[in-house]
Image (cartoon, rainbow, N blue to C red):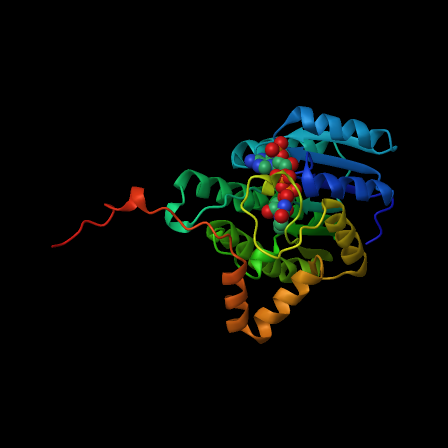
Length: 271
Ligand SMILES: NC(=O)c1ccc[n+]([C@@H]2O[C@H](COP(=O)([O-])OP(=O)(O)OC[C@H]3O[C@@H](n4cnc5c(N)ncnc54)[C@H](OP(=O)(O)O)[C@@H]3O)[C@@H](O)[C@H]2O)c1
C-alpha cells in the first residue's frame, strides 16, 4: 500500500505505539488522519503537532469499552470524513498479575478494549471498505499472541484471539480486495509497561521502531509483522523446539512469586 494521499483511522493514537504510527504515516504523506482514544486533551495535542506537518486531522474521543456509543459516534464520524483506506486497531490495555490473583474487573477491561473495541470499529470500517472494494486493516496483537507469557495470561489470551480474528478476517475480506495484517510488537517502551515487572533478558524496542516495521511490512504486503530479532527467534524456537521455548519462558518470567495469602480459604479444607 502506498500511503500518499490516503485516509487512516488509528485507535490508541494518543500515546505510545499508536501515536508513533500516526507520525510515521504523516512522514509517508498520508492526507487525513482520524485519531481515536479516550483522552481528548492528549488527542488534541497529537493532532496539533500533526497538523503542523500539513496533515488533516480529526480527533474522536471514544471509550472502546462502550460498544454502543462507539458504534453511534463512529457512524456519524464516517459520514463527515473521506472513506478510510487504512484502519490501525492499536488501542489496548494490559494488566500484569499472576493468574490466580487476577481481578475480574481488569480481565473485563482487557477483553472489552482489546477485543470488543476492535470488533466494533472493524465491523463498521470493514463494511465501508468492502463497498469500495479497497482497504487495509492492521490489527495490533503482540509477540504474546504467539508465545504467551506467565503473569500475562489474560492479556496473552486477548492477543492470541486477535491473531485468530485477523486470520479469519483476512480470508473473508480478500475477495473484496481488503487486506488484513497482524502487527506483533514485542516489549516496547510505552506507558503500558512502565509499572510492569520486567521480563529478564528481553530487550525493549521503541514505539518508532514498531511504526517503522509496520510501514515496511504493509508496503510489502506482509500478512504478519514481527518486530525485532528477539521476536523472530522466539517464534522460530516455539515452532521448532517448543519444550525449549517453554523452559526459556520460565527463565525469563518476572521473579516475583504470587502471594497466596488472600486465597487460603477459597477452597474449603476437608479434614
Ligand atoms: N508496549 C508494549 O510492550 C507492547 C507490546 C506488544 C503489543 N503492544 C500493543 O500495542 C498497542 C499499543 O500499546 P502501547 O504500548 O502503545 O500502550 P499505551 O502507551 O498504554 O497506549 C494505549 C493506547 O490505547 C488507548 N486506550 C486504552 N484504553 C482505551 C479505551 N478503553 N478506549 C479507547 N482507547 C483506549 C490509550 O489512550 P487513552 O488512555 O487516552 O484512552 C492509548 O492511546 C496495544 O494493543 C498493546 O497491546 C504493546
